[in-house]
Amino acid sequence: DKTLVPDVDLREVFLRIDGRWGGVLVGRNIGIFGRGGIGLDYDIAHGYGLGSPCMIVNREPAHGPVAACGHVGFGILFPAFNAQIAYNTPEFAGFQLTVGLFDPAIVQERGYTRTPLPRVEGELSFKAQKVFHAEVSGSWQRIGQQDELELNVDSYGVAAAAGVTLGPVQLGAAGFMGQGLGIWAALEDYPIFSDDKFILRKQKGFLGLAALNLGHTKIAAGFGETLVSKTVNDPTGPFSGLNYPKSQMGISAGIYQGIYDSVVLGLDYFRASHTWNEGLNPAGVAYVPKQTVDFINVGATLVF
Image 1 (spheres, rainbow, N blue to C red):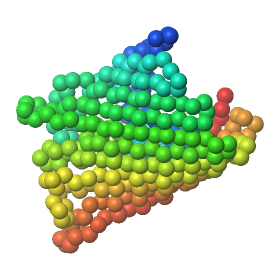
Image 2: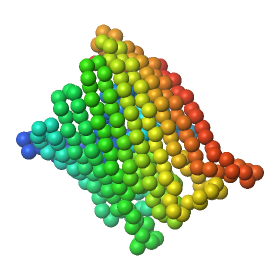
Image 3: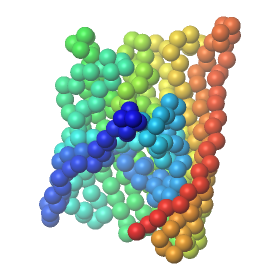
Image 4: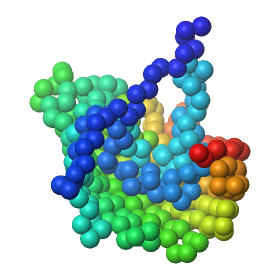
């Protein structure tokens, strides 16, 4: 049945040229904004684990298996894979600057389909051998509505991440803030992107990670939360129409055992806690919806 064949997902198709002057990348690759937090989560907690499976609702065979998203949506954003032209400077005293122009995103759910300018993203990173690293990144995109030519808004954000390795101990922290950023990825096509009068919502998140490496054994844990603010047009009391999560909190833990440098066995746990704004039940009574989902993942990774 052809309907069960997953769509082709060309995430990385690019040309890269490097020299003494730096490097240029042209094509489709992972974004710059927020990639420090993703790398931190991978290095410390979920390199061989699942964490949050992201969008588990409405999964169908045609869409393929669930994704291993770590703490995405629970303290950090996913940079996504985008068409871009990016340049990075040579590394100097541990510092490196990366800037890029990106194919702008649209938010069709809210009618923001006019993109007069490319999206701009940049990152300043610092590395001190294998002991410490830090990244600060930013994103800006002007977006407008086709029917309201005078209506232009700006999606923007700032993200940061830092990690330190002290012998067997790894520690890390990441966070982001801005408006029009979404919950899972920046500029995601989702109704909560703006209110009913098209004012962009503000989002922020934070994440803390820790791991202990004992030979071929790693024990890791993390805590993160993403928060979405109301706009001036949102009701101060219960919502009677569109409601959205005001917070998503994630707690993770995992143990990973390497075998003969080629196989890693993993057991990881993730608790996803969602809290919505105050709503109205069918009887018209105000209440605060909450939901907690626990995920346990067992698997093996072959490294070659």
